[in-house]
Structures are given as C-alpha cells and as structure tokens.
Amino acid sequence: MKARIFQIYSVVLILSCVVTAFAVEAPDYVENHDTLYNNLTIEKRGTVVELRARSRAGEYLESAVDLADPLRLVVPYTRSLFAAAFFEPNPANVLMIGLGGAGFHRLFTHAFPAARLQSVELDPKVWELCQERLAFKPTAQTPVAVMDGRLFVKRNREQWDWLILDAFRGGFVPPHLKTQEYYRECAARLSERGVFVTNLHQDTELFAADLRTIQSVFPKVYLFQTHGRGNVIVCALKSTVSDLGWEPDIAALEKLNPKLASKLDLDSLAAELLPFPVELAAKGRILTDDFSPVEFLDALKTNNTKAR
Image 1 (tube, rainbow, N blue to C red):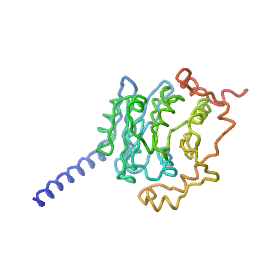
Image 2 (cartoon, rainbow, N blue to C red):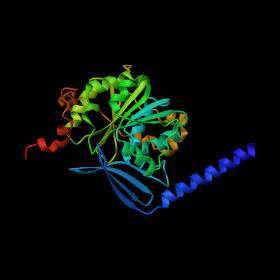
Image 3 (spheres, rainbow, N blue to C red):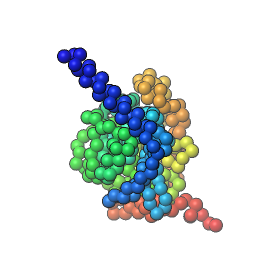
Image 4 (tube, rainbow, N blue to C red):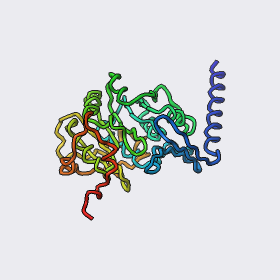
C-alpha cells in the first residue's frame, strides 16, 4: 500500500514539474483582456509574466511573477509589505484585499507555512488569469474569495494578524476602500497585535489625505518607502502601547524566521523606515464615505500646486 502511494506521489510530482517547465519555456506573448472592472494586459517575457492594468493615463504594473523563481519578488513594493513582520512576526491569519498575480503569496507561504492567507479579489478575470498565466495554485491555506473587499470585511467576523490592502485598479484604489469608515471596519477585524498594511503613492495630493485619514483611525502609523520607487507602505497599529525609540529587531526576526531572512534583506527593509510627515498629514482632508475624491486628488501632482 505504501509503495502504491509513493508511486502515485511520484507521478504527481513529475507531472507538476513538467507543467512548470512548460510554462517557463513557453514562447513570449502579449494578451489584452477587457472586463467589467479592468482593461488588462498580460505579457510574458522570458520567464517573467506581468499583469498590467490599462487606463487613459497609461499602463500600471499590478503584479509580476518569475515562473523560474516564484519566490523572487519581481515588483519592488511587494518586498516592503513584509515590514508587517517587524510588528507581528508570527502571523497565523492574514487577509489580503487584492490578489493581482499573487506575487506576494509565494514568498509568504514559504516563510509562514503554517499561516493562512485569505485573499479577496473583485475581478473574476484577474482570478482566472492569476491561475492560468501566473501559475498560482491556491490551497486550503491560500483561499480566494471573488467579491468586493469592503463587503468581505463587513461580513467576515474573523480576526486578522495582518490585514493588507493592495487593491489597485489602473493606478488608484477604489474610493470606498480609502475612507475613515472602512479603516474603522478594518481596525475592528485586527487581532490585538494586528497590523493594517496598505500601499500608497506619495507623488500626488492624495498622499496627505491618505495619511490623515489613516492616522484618524490608528494611533500608531509607520511608513516604509520602497527604495527608488514612489510607493510608501503604511503599517498601522491599533495598539496604544508606547514605543518611544522603536527600532526593528532584525536579529530576533532572523532567528525566528530564517526562511524569510534568507529571501529578504531585512536590514535594507528596516532602513526604508521614514519619519512620519506630521505637517504634510495635517494639510490633508479626512476621506469619508460622504467625501472621497480619490481619483481627483490622485490626478493632482504635488508640483501642480506650485507657482510656475
């Protein structure tokens, strides 16, 4: 009986390797897909597959995966999302609003094999392409719900150790996922040491409003700037425990999670920590369900307000 089980396992393993090899060696291509929510481009160049969203302003890279090395974080800001580990180093239950190409998921499941990573994706086509073109294979530990992210948070009563908001659509996050009311709903779903993580762009008028809105809900807000990019990753805590002089404990995290440390330069990640721009945040207006001009503010570059 054991021999039979071993034979079956061997066949499955061989078939899996064949499928992976075929996907890696498949010819390059570019595909366009129009959906109810997005205008999508899938492009394969060599072993890297990119998922991009098109809009009148151009194309925005949503996600990318290296089929030959799935643990490599191709999109730089996805590495910065792991700053959440500085605050809650042992997450058991994680929620990610926005699936994209699941580039973040491969390293997460490698580094935290016992954790569950629940994803929520609005666009069924993104979910389909993620599996068919970006080789994502969901498991019981990485379930995906196809629905609106705010509705999921409202209906689901679980507690999350990390709650990650990364639901970009063509360069902006849907307005109803950026309001004070929604952030309060997210805070209510965090565990005691839970971390709310979101990806912001700092080169528009929206940045100040984002900061002030998040700060109105979470008493502790930390910023990590992805080197060489416009992305700023927010790690917000609902805990009010004093942290005067807080610094990431790199040595402790490396000891606790050598798998993560072997794939990420944790010292470099910690060096991305930014001082919180108090004066800038004070200039922002709190975004609410009644007032959330996200697309308008996102279109205004900071230098547009300067005299010419």
